[in-house]
Image (tube, rainbow over all chains, first blue to last red; front, side, top):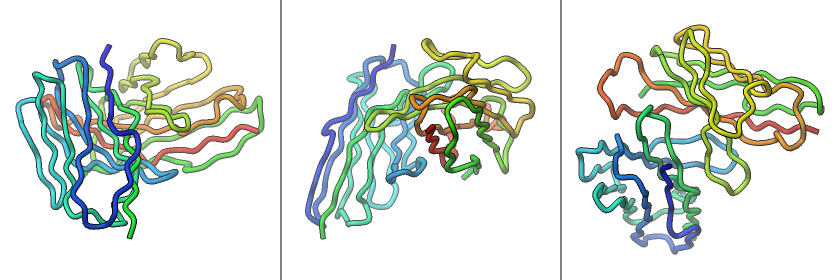
Length: 111
Length: 119
């Protein structure tokens, strides 16, 4: 059974810092990996999708990498802003396309 | 990107009553929809996989008679929580995959979620 772990569980940084969120998974036979953002009491916003054949994806200040063989992914956020404060979820798709989620990293960016 | 609409966003119901949650794909056809549940400070956990025109597949530990799933069309799946109890209070969210994108590794699109509170 796929297990997804996210480190750290919580992170607080001052505005402007670059930061890295980590995700690891136990079964490397994945179809893809997605990073999501979840605001309190809200649904999920897809940030980046990395196919199993890809190594990284970039969108604006976000960059996600994937090392399938080692079962790791990182989400890099450049020049963090208070509006980036949210919970970031890593999710992995195996066969059947359902997603296995980590517990998330709760990010607080202080002004 | 594709849009998935989930309704209602919040519902409060009395213990013992049933609640229906709808999940619609607005601009694409979804052969498969997924239902997840999230308890406070926990990760989203898959409850069931819903395939259009066939019975849903439930994950271990999820009661199929309590959580009724109907996927009668390519754009609509419903989750009915029957005889709800306070321990069913949770955040329920659906996801759909675009039937038209046949290659593996397609993106999952999520609804806004439903906050269910059973009193």
